[in-house]
Structure formats: C-alpha cells, structure tokens
Image 1 (cartoon, rainbow, N blue to C red):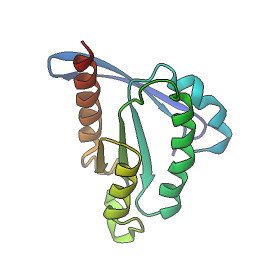
Image 2: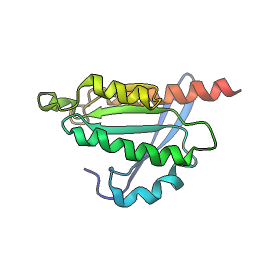
Image 3: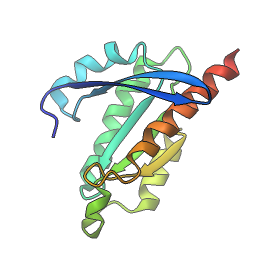
Length: 142
C-alpha cells in the first residue's frame, strides 16, 4: 500500500530501444490531486490502476482521468493503459471485465490488462505493453 507519493525507476529494452521509466504512484488519494498536472507535463505514458474487488476504484478513475485530460488540453494525449489489480483475488471480483474494457475504450486507452502484484502474474506485461506503445508512437513521429 502506498502512503503519500511513491517513486520508482526502471529500465526496459523494447524494440532495440532502452526505455527509462519513472513511475510515480499517487495511490489515488485526493490530497495529491494538485500534484498531478505538474507531474504529467513531461510524461510519455500513463497507467491507470483500479482494484478488481472494489467497483468504486474504477469509478474514481474518472476523476483522475479528467485531471490528466485538462493537463493535455492543447496537445496530443499520451498513451494510457488500464490495469485491473488484485487478480489473485478474482473470487471477490466486483468489476466485470466488460465494464473495464468499456471504460478503457471510452477513454481512448490503448490496452486493458489485469494483473496481480502479489503473484506477479502479468505485471511485466503492463510495463512491456506501455513501453511498446510509447516507442511505436515516438518512432511514428519521426
């Protein structure tokens, strides 16, 4: 569980390109909303995470998305991926896959993945997918 704002960095190799990731975790806390516009200014991609066992966590993404959208009003939106967490607790699921996919599509996110940080299942897929999308968009600009 993140208390406050957490920061991690990581390097991935994607399509022959070394990608340096800076991961900022705001833990979905309202008191950190004012920080978002400043952090997203230089962002090249984003991960929106909700808990598959808490429907309200998916609904709360709407607020976070609107903050991000405002920061990108005058330029092209960065690639965003929707991630359902706690896949290891699937028996307690309260968010249907179809609901999450609909959210993903209606907000122009390029991909939806579910994963479990506890088991590690599909966690690497999230970062690989985001990096592939960022690299392909960047190379398309050249």
